[in-house]
Length: 321
Image (cartoon, rainbow, N blue to C red; front, side, top):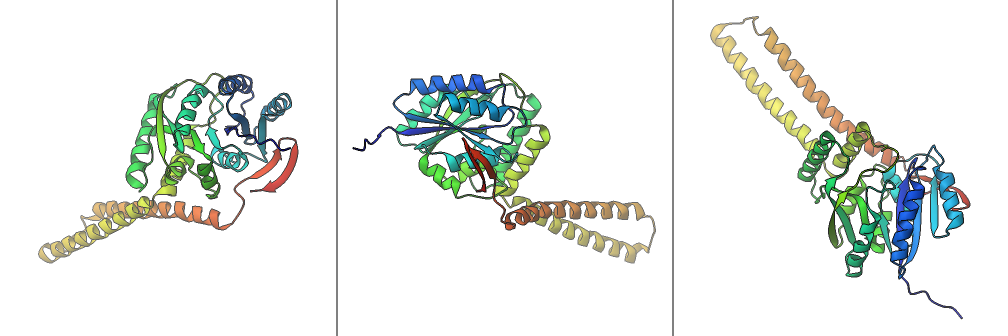
């Protein structure tokens, strides 16, 4: 006789990179969440993004003591955006909660997310009222970036919203189909649509360790976001080129009239140098923007897998997705 399990399954998806110090505390907080919601079947899915410390060994020990813990070990560090895609590929739940390992996103908020999910919402995302220990300068850069991206993109990119959210199974299946290598997942969450619901919360401080996101990585992520969801920079380059061409034409007419009326002079040499440098700078700026898009086209046309999974739990894989 086959007994059917009617319990809904929830996957907690957590990408980790060098989080050996956080894993014991994180696991205890997750177990408290699981015990509070015993009406669901639970899967705790970690994606080890090529950690260089003992994170993988910690995950193996957690797996040995609790079979609800699953882990995917990537063959190297592919970045958090790709690690989330790997998690979507291996998630088995009816819904999937994406969260960070540093506990700045409180697991206690998942209780409310589950309530909204039961009401029929597909994407319940957490919106930050405060941004924790983040510096004032970094906060201003983040807000400026979201403002620029919102104006450039045709889709509604949500400000002050990270990856912490609950996704219905159909959202996960849709995200699996989006296999681009250069990923900006926060934009993809908005791009796929579906019925969304926000929950506001105060983001906490990191309890242990330090963030692997430095300024250059955040800047690169910002460039990914803009180039992935907008061609406005290309249009800006076009507009700059048109304006410079018009200005140069007007300037040429001005010098032609001046020469006819007052004769040829050599006094305009500094002005000529300034104009040449200005036009040269505009050209290099435009070529740089075009190069960003061409580089992304080059990477996508190679057809390489988005990531390579080395292990899934005790199984050695060595194949790509």
